[in-house]
Length: 582
Image (cartoon, rainbow, N blue to C red; front, side):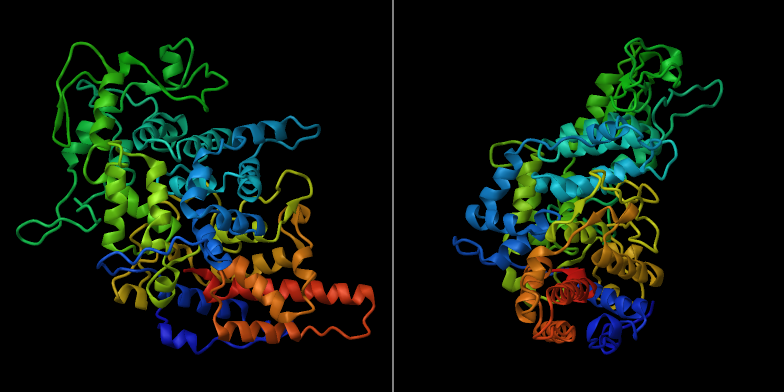
């Protein structure tokens, strides 16, 4: 875009009320906000760990900030729960909590209702909004979204069906706090991953016809899901050779060798045949159940990859070869820092310090009990690390934090203000258009997710300083206006088909006669108590601009209180201070 941080900051106005806010083009004000948010895109500094926080109950603001990282947003009840338990104990409680009802069950139940519409991907979206809004296992829900942006499938591919995608998302949630090795295997064998990355029904090489195994999954499971393209130190920084060049993690030969492993697996069938391998006579649950081996189609030639060789054999052994390959990937030294850094980016900050990455990767390598890949321990380490919990340090560091993902912002509004679905179906369809949120769960445009973890917006201060701001990859002039207009409509009248998801803001309207009290409540629920004095003054002035006459009747008073509440929420969610999660 070419905007400099100093230039855009001077263009932000001090609007008083909704009508005055419309005098400045929505896209321009919001674009300035987003660019300012990106200018605080994340921390890169190293150095020693920050001083641990005292072992005293967190304040309400500290609890809200923690919940911004660990859930889809703070509520009154969740703030109270964190304050009562403390950070570590709350994480332990969430990890121990049973998995919520599945997305597959939600979709199946909706389809069984009398007069249910034709099956569509909107049921998947509805199940996502329902769980982000109401599921008690909020940490699992939040980590599940993060994992879906590492292990990517997408219903944008017409071959990925919505019920299979729901099953894949359920699988990520079920494994969110389990072992990474199990997660990797279940991701690998899920039929929607096989379909999306084209290794389902992948056949062994045939020299007579010139056929070679499909290499798509072999490449992406290394590049995007386990070890990355460069060798890493424990702290996530790249290793270099004697000439100062970064060292590649794998070669084209490694991809070719690994691709031979990923042959001879296809659709589940209780009676597998060549026909079922090729997708015929498909079992009704084939989209939901792990792929199975078909030995006749599996390569028996030698397979060399990542320093390991599976020798040629006269006996086809797809399960044994797969175990060797996944064990090799799992035990690669890159996995800890590669996965840890991405999870930190998704939950806490775009540019974690090397020391932060190192501490979390160390837990990945050994949870303290000799176990490698304990995802529950990794998530706990991320959220309780001094770099995550030191609020004062985060606020003081202008390079700390991340841009909030659009779907997280919408979910934050739903949760914070207790919006409910009038039909129970959570009828909010695709929000992928850049005139909406530019993002829908499991609908990324490619295997590279909605945004790359190393993306840095060009011609910005972020890039000039060597920082990254991944979420900025889905930002443009249209998407900025789309977000603002979508949230204005949602806050004002609800969102979804026939405004299915709506709230009356009872807690906000009850205090709306006091502008300061209203703004402070919004500050806690949306900005974790971090609102600047300048924004607070601007919002209080705007709220007071919606006058409440001393002799107003009940209906007039209620309307003014509601308008005040909506205005305060909208101004907060449009602000750069909200868009940049700190």
